[in-house]
Image (cartoon, rainbow, N blue to C red; front, top):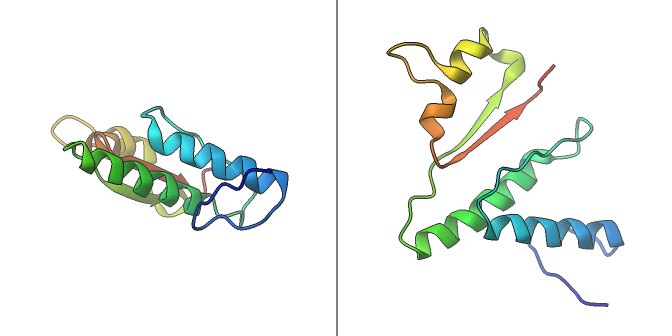
Length: 107
């Protein structure tokens, strides 16, 4: 069995191995990623791993990796206005541009 190394994802199960491979794959491409799961399963850690792996690659290529922003939606009022902005006021999607926006506690 081939070992896939990735700091931050532990375990020897087939699920852990698949998860490591998927994170490494997402670090190499520029597609959008949706991470979801039960509360407490540390989706934010996966977002960190994907972002920092891809940010390092982008910097090596001379590209701007953009920002990494975390938003706890349970503590934000008028999420729609803040997420999409309004005339003259940029929203979070505008601010992150090529970066990564992580939304947590979405009801």
